[in-house]
Length: 114
Length: 112
Image (tube, rainbow over all chains, first blue to last red; front, side):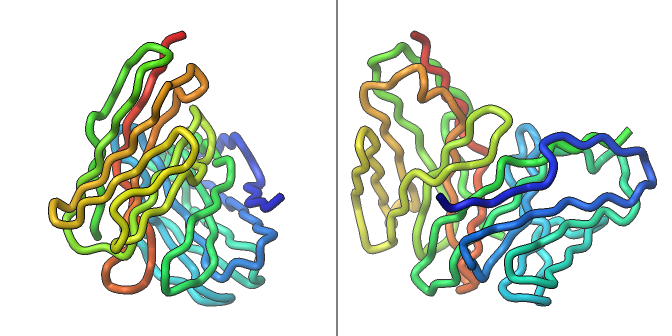
C-alpha cells in the first residue's frame, strides 16, 4: 500500500524554536509538496520540490525553508517558529506527468506554537 | 495562483439523500480533481476529470465538468453517515507546472 508518512501527528513548540517537519514517501515520486491548512483558508502551498535538491517557492514561503537531500524525503523547516505558524501541515507527493496526476497525502501534523 | 472555490461552504443532509457540491475556477485548466478529508486527517483523492471530459463516475460519485462555465460539480448519491467529511476541488496550474491548487472546501454532514 502506497504511503506518505509524516513524522509527527501533533507537535507543540515554543516561539523562536527551530522546527523540523519530516515527510517520507515510498512511491518513488518525483514531486513533493508542503501545504498548510487553516480554518476558512483551505490548503495553501508553502514549497514544492520536483527533484532531489530542487525546490520552488509556493504561495506562502515566508518563514519556512525546505530540504530534499533524498528522493523519498522532504523536510519543512521553521527557522524561528512564531505563533502565526500554528497550523495543520500537510505533505503530499505525486508522479511527474504532463497529463496531471493525483496527490497522495500524509496524515498531517498539527503544530502548535506557544 | 489560481484557486477553485467550492460552494456551498457547508451542507447538512439526511442519510439517503444526494449531496451536490460545486467548484468554480478562474482560468483554463489541465484537469480538475476532487479530494475528501476526514476531520483532522490528510486528504484522499476521489476522482480526476480531464479538461476534455464532461462527466465521470466512480461508485456513488458523479463528477461533471463544464469548461465553458469554468465549473465542476461533485454528486454523492444515496449518502451515508460515513460520507461526513470536507470535500475539496483542486485544479492544475495552467502555466504547465502541474501544481494542484485547492479551494476552501465544502463541509458535508450526513445525519443518520
